[in-house]
Amino acid sequence: MSKKIIILIFIALISAFFIILSSRTKIQNTNILYPQTSANRESLTKEPIDNALARTTKKPFAIKISPNNSPVSPEKFSGYHTGADFETFLNEQEIDINIFAICTGKLLQKKYATGYGGVAVQECQVDNQDITVIYGHLKLDSIATNPNQIINKGQKIGILGQEYSSETDNERKHLHLGIHKGKDINILGYTQDKDELKNWINPLTLIK
Image 1 (cartoon, rainbow, N blue to C red):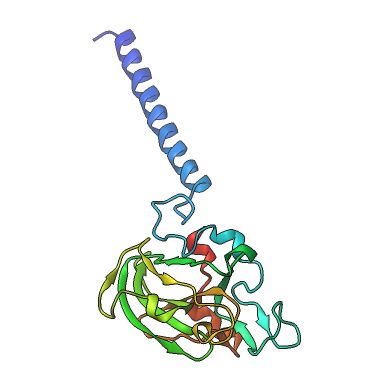
Image 2: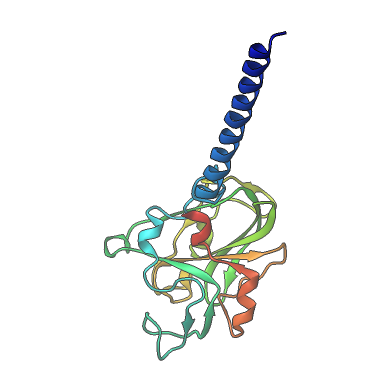
């Protein structure tokens, strides 16, 4: 084999090596620019209420509340908010507002609870993590699913309770959505210890 042919083969091998290296670098850069976050992976969760992000205007996750500084009035709670509140619009006070499951999982509880009125608790897995999801201030008899039955992501759970009635435990008409880490049921809407917020997930990080 002549030296010219050997040189051409060597050049071809070097060129192939750099082409492969360049392709891998592009893939790595793409992963850096577009990590596998909830914004661009296959969606694991659904909005719990139509136009959800436009409704988080008063009580976001982790806000510290007291009767003296609350964005709503009257206020009977205090502490760090463990969920996010999704408000209703003025033209929705007398109409049914549907609430949907943000993920697929078994219904654990549906009951009347002080501070909520009607509340539903669902177990799910998100990113291989066990969570329980709390849907608060629902009209209890609108929840057709029974405990231990599966609710699919996007399936209607029920409707919001009527404002300032027993359906919402005399709260305004809105959805409180809480996401607690693990399988233990914890429906507390507030915690007095800020460090305990590590046991909760900001709902907006999952539904954005």
